[in-house]
Image 1 (cartoon, helix red, strand yellow):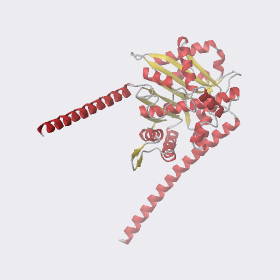
Image 2 (cartoon, helix red, strand yellow):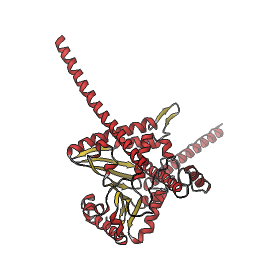
Image 3 (cartoon, rainbow, N blue to C red):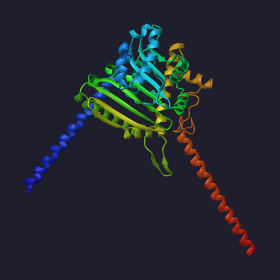
Image 4 (spheres, rainbow, N blue to C red):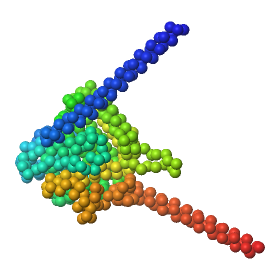
Length: 419
């Protein structure tokens, strides 16, 4: 009996040791990734470099676009049409490099692509161009941990100096106005576009090696983010294209661990949970709650050489994402004001407030989960149905109360008559 107990205890301790070693290995990988990413981007930031990206003539080629959109010829043809028009206008665009590429388009009732736009961020032979960036005393600086702030600042600041827009000539003014609004934190016009018709988007970082932490840099070939923004929901899919199946397995572990770390930050650092208080439930940090819920509902899987992260968002989660874009745009606008005319970030915020154009946020900004999409912003089919249901319930409750009061008054009159 004693021998059996000894063996059982030995096996239990061995299993516990193996589990501890595995957990320690995962924690070590996560630490090296986080610290390596911080140190790498900090060095790039201090040196003033922009990430080199991939040659423009390769990223904007027919073959690259076909691979990106799974041989969707109708979409590739539409995109190549606007790209070729831009290239013919300025041959120097073929000589630069692409750090990131954002593609926006809609689909009409027949599924045909309309309003295609290709926004290329990188470095091109234009001596007048300047890098964009988040201002170092902006809102995100006071809200995020130093390592997270450095990551966001560095990524935006180092994507490149230039933003080149390819689109249809008759839509150029509309597309330029959209980009201008986003870069200045005016998110409400984009919300109106989403409600009018779903917006398909794809963002590609063709050569992310310079951005990534050293321990996963050699494993990832490219990063692609795509999805659809609708009035009441959205979808998102992030692809990490890796060199091999083994590399994808390693990246899969790292991405899952990074998601777990982000969940801890939003849940514990920002209070991303509904508090049970003596007077009831309190959701005072709704955006952090939605961030935690998004991470919990995300699907992170490995598919051969791909690591795929999928998300399905409801309107509240979509509003959180849109407000992040709005905040980044406001910081970019503040940074540009400081660089162009020497306006300090706090002076920029003050001047915006005095001129009636908003303060830290845009002029139309409202707190809460029902803006910019919803009852307090641009009404959507879902928010309209919620409002109508609420009004109907209130009307029924008022009618029921009125009937009860009438019955009580009638009973009182009858009692008085009988008396």
